[in-house]
Image (cartoon, rainbow, N blue to C red; front, side, top):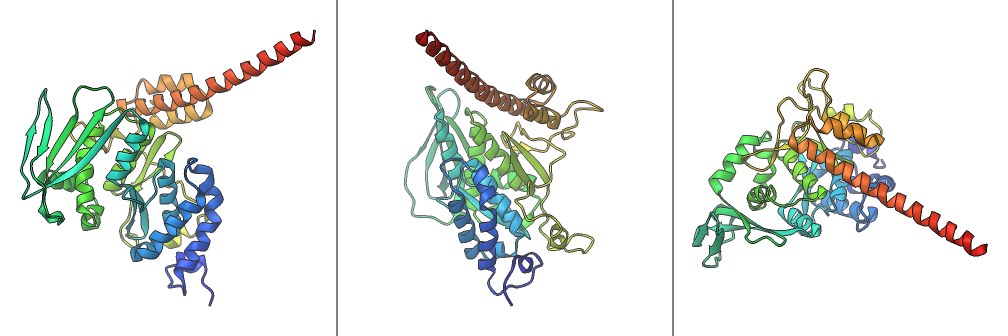
Length: 369
């Protein structure tokens, strides 16, 4: 019997799941192309998805639409999943989510041109000197032949802001990183840190350093996507904002015993935008990551919300968006202001282009006279 996408969705074992998934991605290439930055192509991202699908058995148990959504998220950030540690397609039960790696975050900071960052680990046989305060410095005195993640004692990150006099340094003990994970982890031993501990350990102090770095919209979105994945939530990028969704289920069936994929089967076979959250993201003052807000988007009974400000930006009512943003938490306000600035810049370029064409027509008319 021929393999088809319905077999893949219904959890039946097809004759060739890789061929079925390849066909599924081919149909979605036009939608991928609309969302990708110029340096990435739909063909390239589809090949990366197929490579991950064919080499990761657990991904073959995921809903194909969630894999496609994760590829879309990676593309919007300008990161290639599975390439040089930039990011990873991580299966949680039947749901796939994209997790930016520390190398992806480092790359995004470098692209901004406003600073550079690096992160590393210290093994148990290495000696180091760490100085905090006005003259921050970290020196590791000897190399190591150890490479087992269980031998890591510390992870660190260093950031250099362009034209700044001193670096930003964060040094975390492994025990502190583990406590941080346990505080936010809702996935148990299915959390991605159990698959790649060193990647996770490097990324946590890096996220803390990024709190003090000038961050582009792409870096802010990558931080929000990473935090959502850590807390076991879905997330989607809309414009310049990240909308965090509901908890990702790691079980094949819901609590009612109904197969979740049978429910999803009723949805159209397009790249899902995922469930919009009833919450907006903001930074945790202690860790630098983005955590659950108090009260979600609701600022009070009848008060304008982050979603209202976002809708105003998308409709072009920038004055209303600014008014709403003033009453929002700092992180939400900054996201709205960044979206307004980008939209205003695009409009100014368009206006300048129109004025330029008008002057050319006027000068041409005078010349003819």
